[in-house]
Amino acid sequence: MSAPSPDALASDEILARLMSLHPKVIDLSLGRIERLLAKLGNPERRVPPVIHVAGTNGKGSTCAFLRSILEAGGKRVHVYTSPHLVRFHERIRLSGKLIDEDELAALLEECEVANAGEPITFFEITTAAAFLAFSRRKADALILEVGLGGKLDATNVIDRPAVTVITPVDLDHQHYLGDDIKTIAGEKAGIMKRRVPCIVGPQTDDAREVLEDKAEALGIPLAMWGSGEGFMAHEEHRRMVYQDEDGLLDLPMPRLAGAHQIINAAMAIAALRKSTAFKLDDKAFEDGMMSVEWQARLQRLSRGPLVKAAPKEAEIWLDGAHNPHGGRALAHAIADLEETTPRPLYLICGMLQTKDPRGFFAAFRGLAKHVTTVEIPGEPSSLGAGQLYDAAHAEGLDAHPAPSIEDAMLQIEARAQLTKSKIPPRIVICGSLRLAGAVLRENS
Image (cartoon, rainbow, N blue to C red; front, side, top):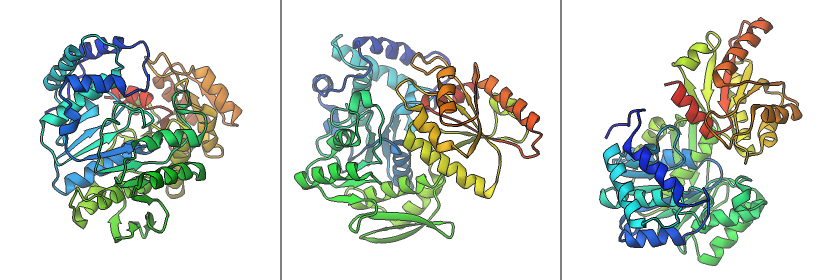
C-alpha cells in the first residue's frame, strides 16, 4: 500500500457524499452506528485486541508510541486515529501501512449502500468502514483513538477492549462535552469497561476524582500517573527512566521532542505492561522510543516553499497544539529548546472558533517575541486573523495579523531584518491541526 497522490481520488467523492447524510457535523450518539454495524454483520466484534485511547491532549502521540513499541516487538498493528492532516487515508492504518485508495473507496461504498441514506454522521459511517477494514485483515492489536469525548463516541462500541487509556483531561469542545473538568472527565470515563485495566495520565484533582470513582464502581484495575500502584517516568542523564509496580525500564529519550512526550510514552508503556494481551520484551520498549514518528507534534520542517520563504537559517517547527493545556506543553518544550539553543521565538498561529485563544496565548507570555495571526486556509470555522490578533494582544503579546502563511513568513523576515539580530529566529506554526494540515499540503 502506498500513500495516495494529492490528485482527486474516488474516495474523496464518496466522502463528500457522506458529509450530507446528517445535518450536524457532530451529534454524539451510539444508536446510528450500532444500527449500521448490525447491517454490516457487526465487524467490531471480529477485530484484534483493542487498546482504546481517550483524553483531551496527547491521544495521538500516545497512539504513536503504542504502535511503535508493538511493531518493534514484531506485532502487526492496526490503527484508527483522527483527524487526518492531508488525506483521509491517514486515519486507517492496516498492519503498519496506510489503507490504499482502492480498498478505502470500496469500503466506503459498501457502508454507503448498507446505510441506505439514513441519517448518520460522517465520523460514524467512516468509523464503520474502519471496523470493516480491521475485521478483514489479521493483526495482533488494534489501537483505537476516540474521536470526541468517549461515552457516546462512535468508537465506543467495543464491549471488551484489552486495555483503556485516558490521557490528560482539560477544557476543550465544551459545546459538546460540558463546561467543567468534572463533566468532561465523566465523558472520557465512558470508555472504561468493567474489570478492564485502565491507564490514566496526569490529571487535575477534579478529573482524577471522577475517574477514580468510576473505576471503583466498575471494579477496574487502575494505573494512575504518579500513584503508588501506578507508574512514573522522568529524564535522567539524557535517558528516560520508567517505573511501575513491575519494575524499572532504562530507555532512550523518546524521538518525539518535548518533555510532555515522556508522559505520553509512559502511558503507552503502562498500557502494554498492564494488559495480558501483548507479550513484549524490554527491547521492544527501547526500540519503540527511537523509532516513533508522528506528524505535527513539534515536527521540524527542513525543506519546501515555506522553508525557502523564511529568514536564512531559521528553525521552523510545526505543532498541532490548540488548547490551553496543549499551549502550556508546547511553550514548555520551546523553553527547553531555548535553554540549549537561544533564538528569538516567532509564532504563526491559526485557530478554530471553538477554541480558547487567550488561554492558549497565555502560555507564551515572556517567551514569544512576536505572534503573527492567520486564518486557516479553506476552513470556514476558522477564527479571523484579526480576532486572533485581539486575543494575543489582550494577553500582552506583540502581534500582527497576516493574510496568509506565506505572508506571515515574509513579515517575520522583515521584522528579523529590522531588529538586526545576528541570531536566526525560531518559528513555530501552531494553533490547530487543520492549520498543520494546510502547512503540510502547501509545503509539500
